[in-house]
Amino acid sequence: MTTESENIVAKISSNVFYKEFTFDKNDFYPEDGKKELADTVLWLGDLLFVIQVKERNVNEIKSEAEENDWFDNKVIKKAKEQIANSIEYLNRYTEIRIKNVRNHSIDISKANKIGINKVIVYMPNNSPISREKRSMKFYESKKSGNIHIFNIEDYLWVCKFLITPTELDEYLKFRERIYLKHKETITLYPEQYILGHFLNTEDDSNIQEKYVETFSKLANDIDDFDISGFLNNFLEKIRIAEQKESKDYYLILTEIASLKRYELLEFKKRFKQIIEDVKSQNLSLPYRFTISRTGCGFVFIPLLQDKIEYWENALLNFTTIYKYKRQLNKCLGVLAYKTGEYFDINWTFIKDDWSYNKELEEALEKETEFYGQGEIKQVERYKLKK
Image (tube, rainbow, N blue to C red):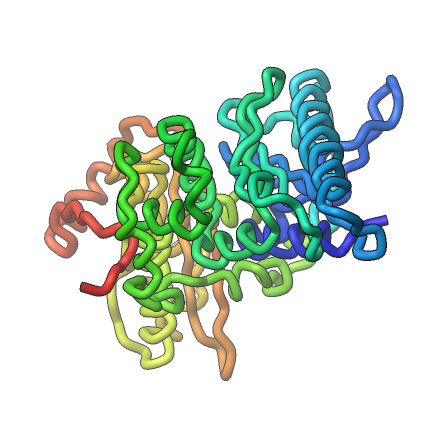
């Protein structure tokens, strides 16, 4: 039976990672018998999170000494064994098919096992656990390595601010580094301090209490880059039955969901612009940018009504040319046009090794007078008020 805390963690995770990359039905059946992975597994590209959840039954809460025993036996001992088993299975079996929140069966055995984020989330339900145990940030396992420990309120709070998978991964890596450097003192600080420090800087050399004030300075700019509402309903927006049944759209979602917030800001800005251009029938060139971190290009194409019949060629050609120009191995294109009262949004994702092409070289020469060479743009990680 799924507990309330397991449902909460799965819901939080599917909001951050989207339903396609969140797995909470984790039984699988190899030849040697049924096995089960941790309560929630998150897999997106090179990112892998294994999360075990423990919840204290309200009706069984007893004295502090007994609650400390529950913490030791369930939150630490049992949960870390379950995480260790999950990692062992991921390394042992060549096929592990489990269902994501979309109820799609996916083989996750090919996930990257290097740098796995191992997390225990517990829900104490007002259990009188000692302060020492509540302040634990990690369990150092000889078998599995360092395992993050979160009170469910802190985990929810962290995911409220770090709304992209890449951000959460970077934070957990930072959290481990600062713990290893400052073991004697970091347990004295609340989770809010560690997150505040991370939002300011990834320099973990010193503890600086001023970072506790970060949240009063954090700009409320989520609407500028949050496109989760659109991506969470990506599947529902696919109208062609064949495409809806295919999982090819996972490739598109993976590239977008892998972006950091400031990269998503650039994505959303251009996506909104092609909608506005189509709405006003404003003739404009495609908008483009490349994320050097992921090696992926993005092309946004507004199409006027008198060109609608050519949309497939336009989408493929503009995306191919930009991929070639930046010498990329992958590029995502999105094209919008308007029919009646409705907007049609079409996507393509091209992934293959770059190689010289004479025809594309000629096409690039023709477009140079319109685009120029482009520019490198540096943006801040998080916006903090002065």
